[in-house]
Image (tube, rainbow, N blue to C red):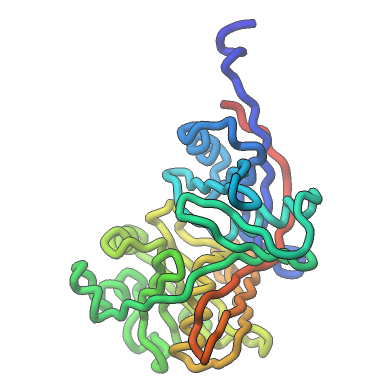
Length: 303
């Protein structure tokens, strides 16, 4: 056997679409099982070869149901909503988990996971809000953010202002007045990347409550060039912050929200995310964001 043959590893990768809507669309993530054998450098290389926005690596955990490591093609990230949903949906399909509560161990600590009849939900933290007036200490203004989206103040929903929300990751959440405005956004990816670096953002989550469907609370777009994502089809870690904005800022006082995403992408991939808020005395104490996953195909990657 040659040296090159000896060092070659073949990695099985499942491509699982998370947050599918009517069993279609969704946001694809790579899922690699039995990942204890791979180094951090190898995981990054695998993620680069898979070429999706995130790939999840499943390892054994001493403290939780599984250990999950998430890599984009450029770096490790602490959490990824759609890759979490993709992973647990796939593991449930394999029979590794049944309905009920389990958990994931990440580099940023444990998070609760709920599995229920084909749906997977992940825990996020109570929200913290940073208004635009406070962005100046990081040399960012609201006009900078609007300019990076080629939006004007007249394009915004007058009921609420853009706000930075953290339920475990930072997102700027921006409400626009209607679907036409949302559809016509022309993002300046370089400007968004620069602002995201200054404010330590995953990205922007832009939404409207004009959905055309009384069952859907908001429809959205997400831009995260800092993580190599020009636009994403479904973002569970951003849907949580949005649900908090709907509850706290738009005064939609209920504990469950349906959010759609992906339909305004250049190549539409309609997705649906359900967010359930944990409330105590009218205050959000935490939340669960989730949806359905579907295995689309299998790959083999050589290292």
